[in-house]
Amino acid sequence: MIGDAERVANQDFLAPGEEETSLLELLLVLARRRRLIVRVTAALVLVAIAASLLLPNEYTATTSLLPPQQGGSTSAGSALMAQLGGLGSVAGLAGGALGLKNPNDLQVALLKSRTVEDAMIDRYHLMDLYHVRLRSQARTRLEKAVDIENGAKDGLIRVSVTDRSPQRAAEFANGYVAEFKKLTSTLAVTEASQRRLFFEQQLSQAKDNLANAEENLKKTEQKTGVLQLDSQDRALIEAVGQVRAQIVAKEVQIQAMQSFASGENPDLTMAQQELQGLKAEEAKMGATPNGTSSAPLVPKGVMQESGLEYTRKLRDVKYSETILELLARQYEAAKVDEARQGAVVQVVDPAVVPDRHSSPKRALIVLGALILGVFFGVVWSFISEAFARIASNPAEQPRLLALRQALFSRK
Image (cartoon, rainbow, N blue to C red; front, top):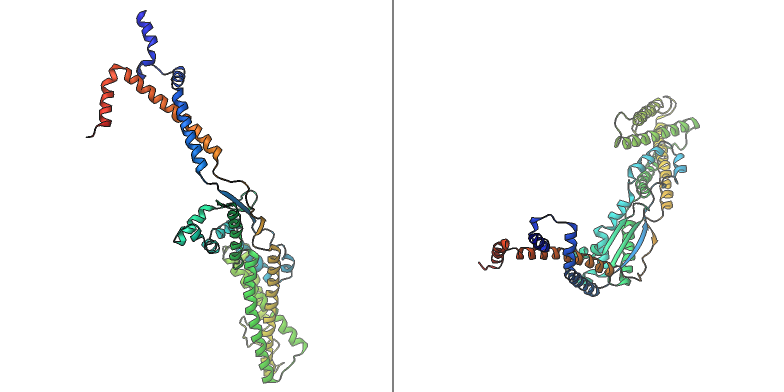
């Protein structure tokens, strides 16, 4: 009985492996070491408070941007495109090919571009502000201060700038958007802008071709003396000019479709059949596919040689006029769409001077220190309790002595 009482009285000093650890025993250890836990926790909390007070305040200013909406851009020019002949379908294909799957990703990439960052460095003299020698170092510091968020739910792009000065944070955020607009003003990043530039180039070339054709017609008139044809000849010339213009439009359409459609695509097959039909119609009119055909447009013997030469030049003029008209309509449709889109990006909420600091989060720092203090205090308590039990166990004395000698030996 006496042995049992001694074992119960001294059970807290048994080796850890002699009996199973219970929840009550763990609570007893924490109760005995509660002062240690409090001291460790208090020390970490005091350090966290001091550190949070020494950290400088930082302020974050945010501006929200609305990127161009691609979905409704082509609807504005649908009325004009409906008036077009063969080129109407080409515009739809070109718009689809030039359209962007996710325009927000493109705007974010442009915002993060080196061009915009270098413009910010030069605008606000960031190399002097950050006290760096290299432009790459200034870019790195700027990238840490700027956060660009692509809103997946609302579709807005948010540019946030963090700085120790609230006024400078707001100025940097608005300046970032201003430099971004300067960049995008020189780039065609929307579907309508790309279509407008494409048709603008084609329209310029068509104007040159028409001017050359008219000049050639003028020289022919001066050379042959023919100034006017009868109504039948003029109607035939205009008809073949229209057919040739449609052939060119259909060829452009087929070329655009072949860039993404296979040879078995039914729309591509139908377009090729329509092209063959237009070429057959052109052949029936007595013209060959090239623009310098010598085949007459009216039955042989009706016109003299001089009238035939005049007819060829007039036919080239009518052809160029038709192409110019079609391209001009496409160009105007693209301009209407671009005007509806407005600016590349629109500022929803400009950055304002923040009235509260965004960091440091002093309450979170102190709370985190409190949690870590309790954790380390508990761990330290269990370790101290384990060493105390080992020290009180005579069987473990030689091992404990050997551990101390190994740790503190100078050899």
